[in-house]
Every structure is written in structure tokens, then in C-alpha cells.
Length: 79
Picture (cartoon, rainbow, N blue to C red):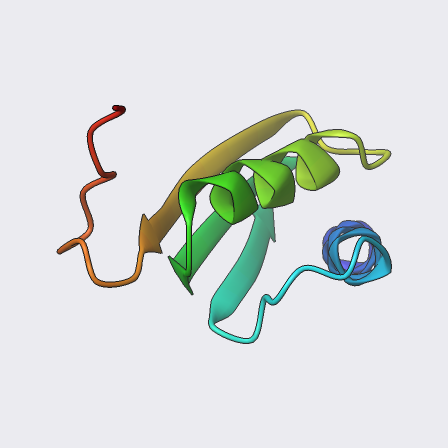
């Protein structure tokens, strides 16, 4: 349990360090797997949060369930 809290704190600190708005994103950790849930403004932010999470020590896998605000949860089509 303490290790999971340590990983969660590391993820949150890493994301804040790159100045991403994660006010609507939650982080849960179980057995080295980090689950990200919530909404963000754009796809770039979603993927940067995942990249920061993946780079943290102790993270074995990332389940990115973050949705893009205003798209009904679907990512906008690339143009």
C-alpha cells in the first residue's frame, strides 16, 4: 500500500512539474499499474500526462482512461 501511494505521489509530482492542468484527472495505482481517469482540454495534454506517468519509477503499465472535454469522450479526428 505504501509503495502504491509513493508511485501515485510520483506521478502527480511529475505531471505538475511539466505544468499540465490535471485538476480533473485522478490517479489510482494497483500492483504497479496506474489508471488515469478524468477529462482534459486536448489530446496533447492527455498523451503528455500518460508519458509523464510512464516515465515514473515503479510504473509497470498505464491505463489511460482520460477523455477529451467537449468531444463526448471521443478524440477528435485528425485533420
